[in-house]
Length: 210
Image (cartoon, rainbow, N blue to C red):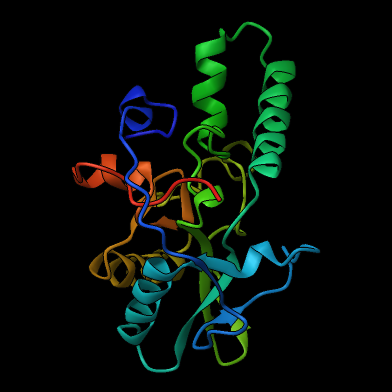
């Protein structure tokens, strides 16, 4: 399993495409949840290339099913705060862990700031919506490995069969549209960032932090 803390991810060069961040509340077609709303409106913005692929994925979903966007762009400072706070929490719970393990374990839930896809506008946290209801995907969005007994891992079998089928439907649509999943988080998908490039063998990432 490729983690964001792997040196092969940070080694990927970035050739910035210059694409702007589009506000999903203005560029319609996708449902945007308000739970991660911030004062600057960052959460509802994504790069044009990501939005294009999300719309393509949504069109491939079964009738009546839609994507629900939870969070897109995240400022670098906020990403750093999330990572350092979670890493410190793990350190308090596991004082014998060396720094390298803390980095690896923390990166299963929060991306290291230097390679994080969210600050690039390249990553989206999402789930499925149908008939006015957010569907059960086995865990809540942003569940931690410890709190969910690793059920947050995309391939987990430690979830109900119906939730497993929904994850498969979501994954097939997004993968065919060109996005890649971060395996510890079933809800996290990205395109054009360093992790995407490392996972697909692309020679360079398209997006740098904005």
